[in-house]
Length: 455
Image (cartoon, rainbow, N blue to C red):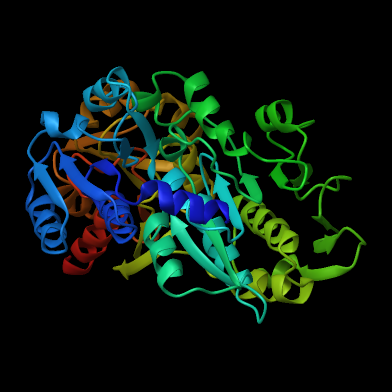
């Protein structure tokens, strides 16, 4: 009997409480119900979306509640939390106090698959890298399935695998620090660490906690697995070099641990054979060169040919909401970088352009260090600060920049347009979370694009 069979036997007939009724919570509940567990789902919110999701689950036999957590949550053998549920939330603390095991969504999904997992984490570039990997891992021998913190929840794809087995399946997961807080046996075959910089400090309280959460990605890996990290990131070099797994690095600079690097404007492999010229790379920007090299290294570990890797490097053009050109109106270009939820991502966006910028910053602050933008006084013509963080942005940057504060992003778009001149760029790169006014960064980016088109 395999470990998966044992885990299915353990879950069948057990009582499980799922906390959170968003995308991840829905996936957990559907997978647990399919496996024969008695599932109860609970969410402290009572939005229309929560109500619709609960109605769907009730129709398939899952019990639940919205608008608060009752004692029923603690009448369970296992509590599974969605990534949005913090480790210090009352429901998690009470569950642990009651002696109930608490795990996260990716831990739960991983119990029911033995398909290889390649997991990508980092402060910036995760979504771009996993999308590149997903394209590289479409071959006759490999079916790369994208999931995790992007697209579909991992548990949803695992349920699909149980219903439709595929021996060629490989999971490509974008993994956030939130998702790593409650793992136990989660075990990627390949873990990729892109970079580390302070982020989500509102959730993790300090940088050290955030870093420790990220590093958990490698804690269950063995000498048969691979750890790939950015050789130019000193924190990763200190924390990951010397672990028992097979250690590989990526960097444009030549390095003995690199599978790929750059020499004379050419991307080369370890044998110095040419993959492609830099001029043929489809995704501009030095930061994206790191993402491409990281993805290439992960794909190589899965047996993808250099020919396929080179093809994707030349053809991949980017993802929505990341430096996405929306429209040009009266000579003013509008760029949607709604996925930029921390200051490092904003800095990357600013460095990608040479034209004067009208920068739209704001949203829900999460321990952001806005004064780091003071180094870009020559790039930024105006700042329009919106949302909950607007006063903080104004206090920290006014006097050094021209800062206009606006409550709603919709009004910030028209304000930025009026402040811009022909040849300027209006750049939405918020540097904050989206949850003060939007469901997620995708919702923010889509609405930004719609409001631009209405101008």
